[in-house]
Image 1 (cartoon, rainbow, N blue to C red):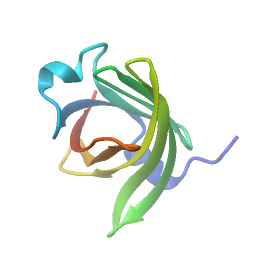
Image 2: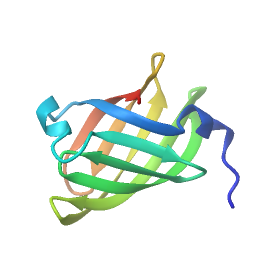
Image 3: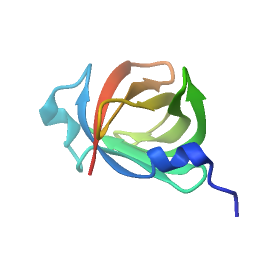
Length: 114
């Protein structure tokens, strides 16, 4: 079993996606409650709209703050999809970051614990 990096503690758990730059709020929860989840040393998941995927996460520090960088693979409207993203600790109880779809859209995001 892989050792959980110290920086992972700032991210572990389920985070509710409350805002994506390129999506309206009605779209976020189209299929299920929009979320980003960090589990253990390097795993997680993401879901919003019709997209659902699994994360491969690496934790680090960026400009002195905890950061999670991830690649993801899954489906968007039943079509294979993949991409990358990052999240950093923002204001109390929030994560901020950016999400990218390979050969597609990208969007900044805000997530809250829960």
